[in-house]
Length: 183
Ligand code: 5GP
Image 1: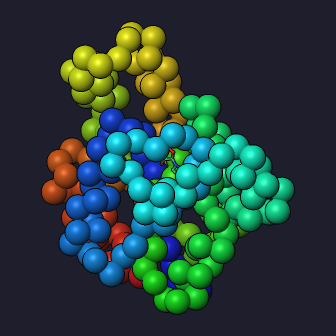
Image 2: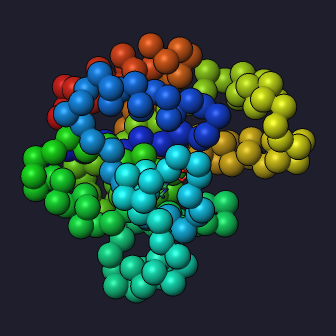
Image 3: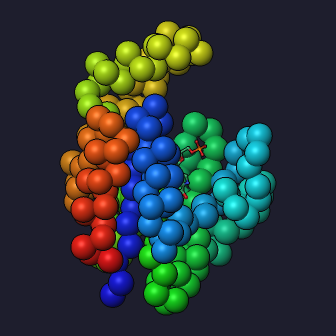
């Protein structure tokens, strides 16, 4: 079965930047579009960044067993449609999922052609410095975020690969080394 790639990593780690750069250099890959109940951010487009659903619609998808995996994350629901992934693989498309570590492990337990890659900060201390450097969050919010990052690092022990994001260039190269030989 064709392999696909599930990438996780906490926000603040620069995961988004690394994936974006990977996609720019490897345009044959497409990013899976998840469903979410969170509000649309500025510039986000329904059907491009996410499929934006209300809680009822999301619950219905759960009931109808439409999700390959779903999770509650910071009070909002996020899920990957089974059909979306299956269609892409059937069409021989190169697919990347960007989801949280719990969702990633769920996918792996269901599909053994999933390759799990964790994007890690160079160190927790470095990440703490970055988060504090933003000056946008309260101490409590920073602690909460650090705790969830520690949990994600714990989950990532069951991942297939880890890429340390010391610089975007190095991380993208590492990612290419892992992905391009398997696809
Ligand atoms: P954001 O709200 O910043 O777009 O995403 C928040 C978190 O939800 C990120 O860690 C992202 O990887 C995760 N996420 C996005 N889509 C999915 C999904 O379909 N399933 C799961 N489990 N997590 C997702």
